[in-house]
Every structure is written in C-alpha cells, then in structure tokens.
Image 1 (cartoon, one colour):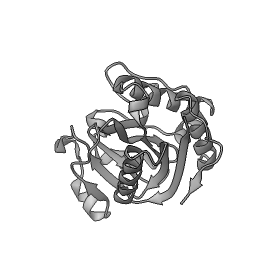
Image 2: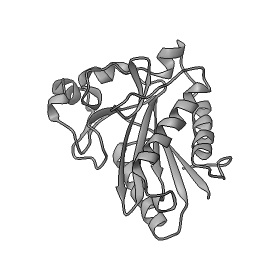
Image 3: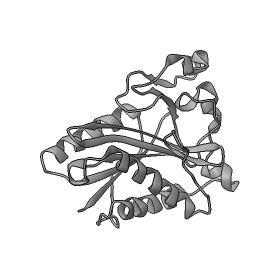
Image 4: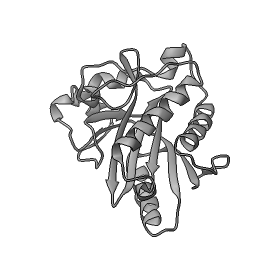
Length: 218
C-alpha cells in the first residue's frame, strides 16, 4: 500500500478541514491512497466532540488577540490550541484496509510520534487512560480523530516550536496539565523540515506503507 503526503504549509484550520474532506471523498471513491496531510495553523482554539466550555480559561484573551474559536469540531477529544510552530499531522487513512480497529490505529499514531521524537533524543511515553504522547509529566502531542465510513479524518498536533503560553488560556484536552515542545526539551528552535521528514518516514514504517520519499507541497 502507498502513502501520499501533502504539505500545506501554514494554513487556517478551516481550510485544512476542507482539504481533508476532499481527500476523504477521493479515498472513498478509490481515487486516492492513504494520505498524510502536514501543516501548521494560524492561532486557533478548537473544541472537539467531548469538549466542555468550562475548559476555556480566558475568553477575553481569545477575543482581544483575534484567535479563531471553533466549536463542534468533528474530532474526538476536548479543547486544544493550534498555532505556528505546532506540526499538524492529519491522517486520511482507509481503515477498511487496515483491520477496522480504532484502538490499534490510535496506538500506531502514538507510536510513530514517539519514534519521531526519539530520533531527536527525546523519550516519549504514553499514559494509561489518556491519548497522546508525553515527555515525563508534560504532554508534547495531542491526538483526536474522526472516522466516516471507515476512512479517518483529523489526527495529531506535535509541539515543535510552539509558543506554549497559548496553552495557558485553556485546560489542554480538559486536563490540569502542562504542555511541552521539542524546542523546550532541547533548549532551542528545531528545523521543522527535519521533523517533517522524520515523521513521514515513521508514518510509512508504522503502517508498513511505501512511497514516502517524495511528497507534494501545495
């Protein structure tokens, strides 16, 4: 099976969702393969299907700074922040060809993130009862997916050079936790292109896919 990769650069959350929907339709019609969409977003707060608005801590800051605020996003999870320096990985995968096992799929996503940051000497881990990837007691990546007719949407956000102060205006994922980033862990800004390349390779390896060497920048 093949892996297609699309790099959208910095793009609004809404535009990225529209691109996901287009690829999702193509996969259902048999016109596309498993697809990994990479991008960064403008400052955005999103609330997933299980979100509780009490986990928004500073509405005034959101309004004063013109941060996009999106309620009812069709993904699992609670509230989270997206912004520049955070690498989004949207997996539009045909789970009809991958066993139709959501638990397995989510574990594979966590595993590929752990393997990606391990390449930069950061030891990630998972926590029982919680989704995502952690470094000690701080969360470095959040995961939230949707599935429509056994083709997945959405995916994960990996904090690379993210300004972590923006997480202070919410309870990330509805939890009283601190977030971290590769930048914070390693004490300096990271080359996003290197992270993307490693992530592509780990995605292909985790799902035993081919075709990860070349990817499309749009």
